[in-house]
Amino acid sequence: MKLHNVSIIVTCQEQQTQLRQLLPQLFSLQYEGEFEVIVVDKMHDKDFAEWLEEMESRHPNLCHTFCPATARGINVHRLALTLGAKASAYEWLVILSADVVFPGDDWLSRFTACCGDEVDAVIGTTSRKHRWHRLTFNIFRHRFAIFNATSSIILCRRSILLQADNTIPKKRIIYLPL
Image (cartoon, rainbow, N blue to C red; front, side, top):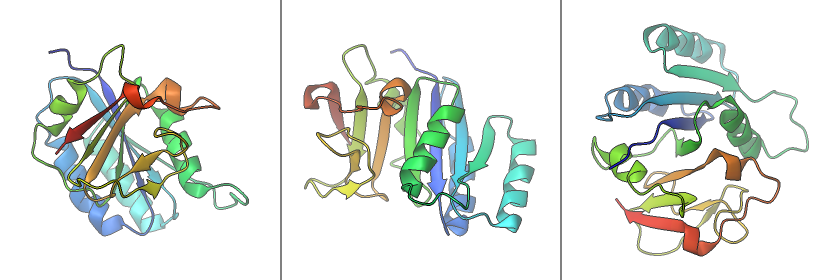
């Protein structure tokens, strides 16, 4: 089983409490590949930025960035994902919200085990029904969609996410039950 190096992008806005719980969980993952965590702050809280800088001093694989406050006319969530993807060092991106609930310590190994030449995205969910939240990318037909931010994890290729037309055919997506 080949483990891919991954960049974990966490976007947050007014979710500092959840992120303070999430980051220690991410750094205690049981994963043999390399990973980095990129936090994209959409709020600009000074105390929170200082806490992130302190966390970065303890975890060399953590970095953070922010969306500019003057992002008028631009979808802030799409901008946050794009900034996270551009800051990433690896081809495979894991996209999480700050309030995600992990299905155990080995979830990242299970997800990356599904990656291959014929796969562009892995979507994990605990839901059986297709209830989509729109995140403005086109993984599933015309939307980068997840089932529920607290019960879904998305792994996708950086090269696809940054393309102008980032539609992924349904046959190149794996759905993984959590």
